[in-house]
Image (cartoon, rainbow, N blue to C red; front, side, top):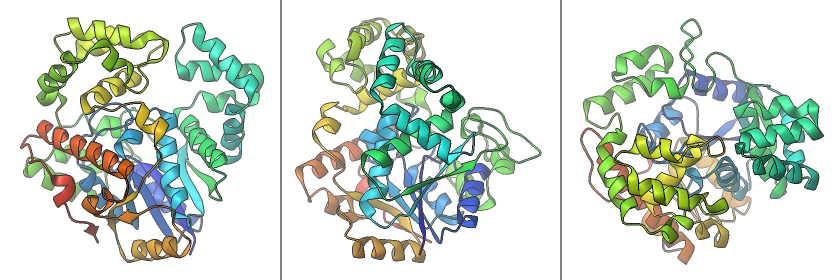
Length: 398
């Protein structure tokens, strides 16, 4: 069995995601394993819909096994997000291919860009560009243009660049997994819908307030799930509903507390964040007062989410991925787990967070963070849910 892995958020799952799964199967994959981000996302915002809904949508639309990306990685920078996803797939021991979408559709070029990341001269040029006040993405492109002009186009494309982060971690882990990319078409990242193609970015779909508006851009089975969640008050998440809670948490934090938040301690950024918290009366005001040309909005939002959740940068410095949590599967997914066991999977695997948290001190810490993220996320729903869903939700089987 040839097994392909995909790292995703699917917030929400749409036709473009179904297309990637379809093309991955056409390239020879017999099974698809998805590592899915949870209730707080890499863009720094709470997820628009539940990870359980997203996991079921993926299974109904072509995936076979859905695994959770722990929250410290899911709310991390592109590098940490990639590390988390690749670590899960590599630890299984049976995944053959990593499939990801890209603008270029050129996996060899993206892998070359990943190798460039690791060169000392690139790191020097990158740091030099950062010192001049540009964003991380801009600094990467400047360094690429100087050292490898033929790769600069990759540096300018967000999905190519994320793919390079995936490839970088494949290299760092000396993984047997081979990269394979699916060229994107239709609406690009954050763009409006392309009606003729039925494609729209997840960013665009999250602006809709009625499920009927989403209908042309998602598989029908996914639409049914989203419509159900709308009816039951489980969609859409509203950041406005948790705004007072977020600001309340941030206002209780000291300047030193902000220094410990991932991506906040370097370059004295925590001073700027602390000062902004003292003045801001709303989240939009807070974000704008922290954001600069150097500090992108996504980074600012990740810092705020990290502070709200109580993330500590030492978590990922001192601890590595402690377990693999299963969100859902079908019969083929169950067969993948058997292959993983036969291949000597390096981590405990279970659908039960209660069982996983008992496996190590690090596992207990990760489980505590996961539970906290889910409990707080519930407060932003039209009909807020109870605490403890991380422990009471059963594995999804289709």
